[in-house]
Length: 257
Image (cartoon, rainbow, N blue to C red):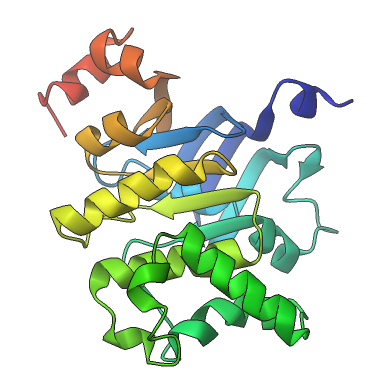
């Protein structure tokens, strides 16, 4: 049995450096993500947390001048191995973006889309997965009579939960969330946070948030980034109440940010 499987670690970055052309955006970031835990990445704007998140499913590959050094392991697989199928990686490591981005299709087709792209043709299986995913995203009661209507007619909070359902439909192992509630009102935000608590029973969740209150509410582990460096990581309660480093304390108490 491998080390990563035996100690519950789902994903790890080891000495990760990331460059946009000549600009180094991330410096030597080593971080572990455990199964059935929520890890929050916090830090001021431009500190590298979203860049780091996008490295975890190779979204930065879409930027021609981007370059990665170091390793990111999904259990025992190096996700930057040239032989790795990136489409398969993004199925295993799903992503939910800051702004809801439903397709201009029906609610049903938004969730079914990823299944079809992954080659699933069985209508019964697609229907089952769509229903289960919408239920898991705590959206079923609100949309069960609107499945054939355009997803663009849903509220912002409903659209974001639909995007979460879409990510869940392909049965990922890790779910990345980039400020998933920043465009939402407080009630919709609470629904997303409640959903995160439920989802961690099945998934490894990594969330970038600009809200320290949100990090404190939803995460088990918090990692503080500053100017492209991982400054401190630890159990969320401990990091917020007894940070080891003055830099972390200054950020948490609002002395800078």
